[in-house]
Image (cartoon, rainbow, N blue to C red; front, side, top):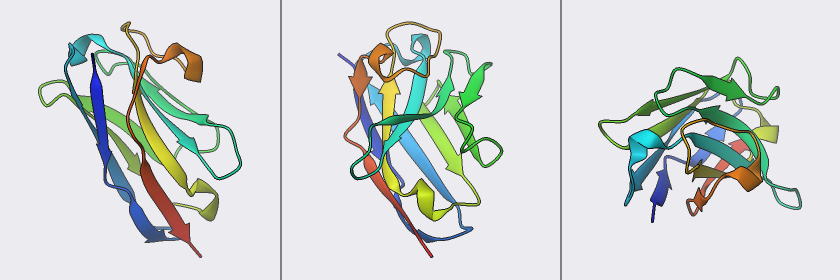
Length: 124
């Protein structure tokens, strides 16, 4: 059973930056593709970024492309989301998720394990 714990959320002004971290335990982290998703109040959970098991392949939602960067450190069992040039519409609870396979996906339904989420609020 994989356990995921996110950290790094908070309140930031428009144009600012945050780095989210997701620490994994209880599984073979280096075998899992990972993803970041977010959910704003009253909206469905949506894809943000994904990374395959070795970190060589990444993907991003159009809304964050060029501003967010996903990375992973398999030695530390941690995946990161660097968020730059933040906008008010980036305000949401951000979730880390793990697949049971090595190749990443942008589909919520294809991730088996989820963290509890971390709040990101971008103020104008």
